[in-house]
Length: 132
Image (cartoon, rainbow, N blue to C red; front, top):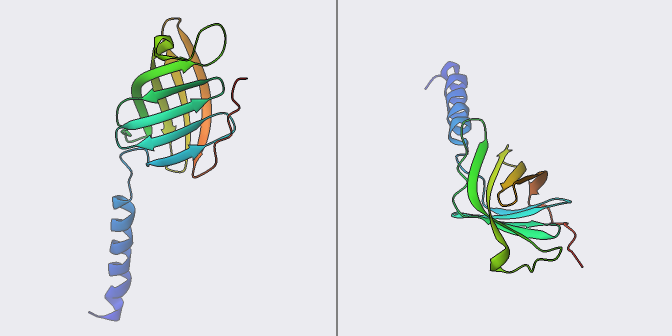
């Protein structure tokens, strides 16, 4: 190979690395923030919020814009209702990520409400306060 061809080869190698680095799922691991945390696994995620917790019960696949949607549930830990399975409410989670920072919302049914946005960072400690 001639030295003149070396820059072209290196550029092609770099472009291959960038295109293969495209992420098609939310990266697994612990995501933390001041008002929420997520533990992302292959099949979904555990969600921890102030006075509530939940679960996304399906893989967090990303579209071409870094957005995801996932169904699951939400459980309130405050107020007159106990935090047990009988207080579980269906929820749909949606959000976006750049692979390092993730912002999400959730739409809860019965009663209908939207919570968020919550922002978490991959590898940061969780800091949501809990109910007394």
